[in-house]
Amino acid sequence: QVPLVESGGGSVQAGGSLRLSCSTSVYVYKRHCMAWFRQAPGKEREGVAFIRIEDGKTYYIDSVKDRFAISQDDAKGTVYLQMNDLKPEDTGVYYCAGDRMATRYGDVCPRQRPEYNYMGQGTQVTVSS
Image (tube, rainbow, N blue to C red; front, top):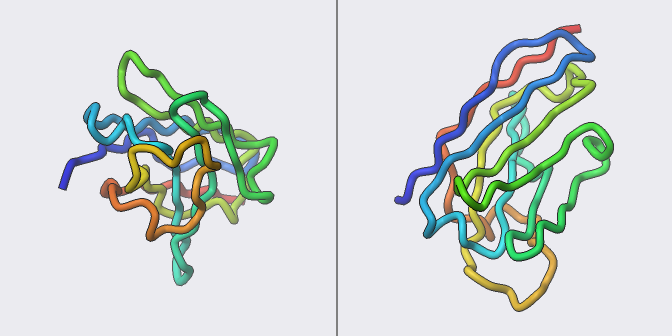
């Protein structure tokens, strides 16, 4: 399993910000898409932000749109997740994930977990009210 290493999690109060980082190998970074998933206690793991590596096009689920921003640094092979105006419902373990496909010929990023077969160990984000 090619590792992805997440960092940047922590505990903040509602309204605060955190920036997560995901470092990985060139092999995983050069997938069609990279994504951030999160898993809240007792809930399914869900994808929250996606980025198409070839052109940087991004996608977000509605609950994080306008608050979260996913970005890439091609030189470092790193993906970031800037999280602003955090809410208690954002609490969970955040995972960086790599698309199982190296290319989807211009298609949008998939949103389903099975399409991402590279995933890190996760970093905890806790938001208190």
